[in-house]
Image 1 (cartoon, rainbow, N blue to C red):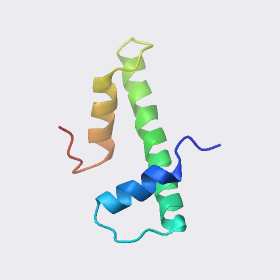
Image 2: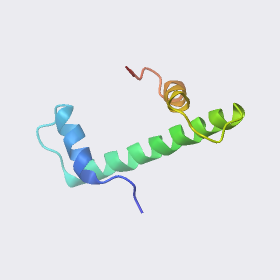
Image 3: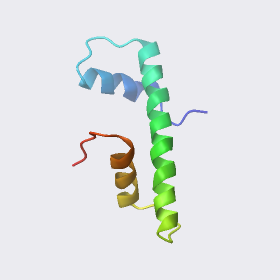
Image 4: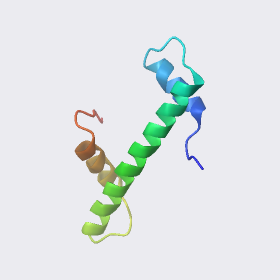
Length: 75
């Protein structure tokens, strides 16, 4: 079962400048973003556990994203 739906993927692609978005494109973006989310989550969990915590904090997620996605801009 997927955690994300395709409707927000259509909106993201349109927001990025796409005039039209196929259902296949939205579905592929959904798959990619889910996989990236899982990768970031796993790293954030590792960071929390290595800090002796059971709770994943915002900074764990942020740090994991910055580490795994070169050039990502987070404000």
